[in-house]
Image 1: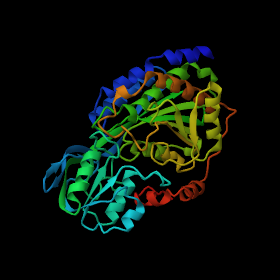
Image 2: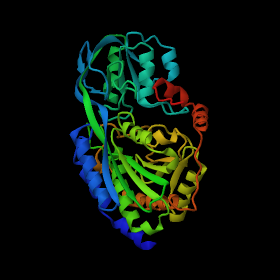
Image 3: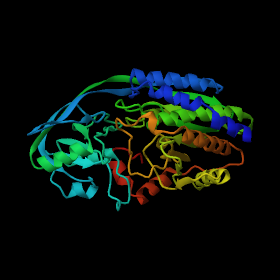
Image 4: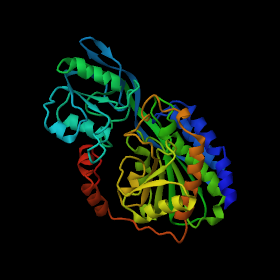
Length: 433
């Protein structure tokens, strides 16, 4: 056992692939850079897997142009939110604070430009996704949407709008830094401002990367990540590290292939950042009953302690804790649902699945979805420690002695209602039931 641990902890395979991904720079969904990163990932997996290939699919392409918030004193810096429509929208400026659902209910926003923060108060009982706030603004009749980063540092946040049925959003949407947001609120509350977005909307192609390893069984364990990233940064944390981890785990599992009782199917998705499009494409084509579980890496390596969302599957929670206990390494496990990464296209139908991230001690995405998502903020030590833990977890999940039952869609829907997540999913068009 010590041999594979030592090999994994001294391996350069995954970290080298992470450097390869961040050096692509623009991995936006449907771009040439995303394709380049997918091909590189396929080739990296092919060195360790039985087979590796790409599966292409059509997406709604979107390429960033200029944007701005014009005030009586001049134009403030901003970045367009992906899949914002192009155009200019003018209206009275309103700072709606955190943009909680009750804030929208109590405000007159018809024809106005509404700004909301990217976080929620400490006392609030759940995370509010950007798209939920956006569609509350759309329903309230807002003319435009301004998304203010809660993290200081002159970092405007990005992140997509739109739905699966209508990929391009309804009203222009931009992100502004904490500092620009504070200035807008202080100086221009009640004044007319104009939000301008220039973007190219076009047809595009994305792709999922596939590879397999282990025995030829009907049942498969999916080990997953997403290749794409927002075009404004290197995408090291979100999600270069996750895809590099898939490559490293594939290398380590190849050395332990004789221990696998269940086939491992690696999938590195395209177009996650614009609505989980690659995962939805794969889930639609897959026999979900044949999926034992999904082990999805999105947000690993950002901190030293792995964080597992187990989505109410007790056997998954126990397995994650067991790995932490056996290696004497702290892990964080929450049974709650997390519908905001690629695992969700399977979990929403009752497939057992993890979202594996890491504890950072901060609220929200931190450096993620900003210019600051860069490689130097990650540590090789954390990558290698987590590769050991996640490799061993994959072996345990693939063992014939491990069992986890699928849930019914009714059970997942009821849990979403109980955790107060259903309302937001209905607003954003993500409610599948």
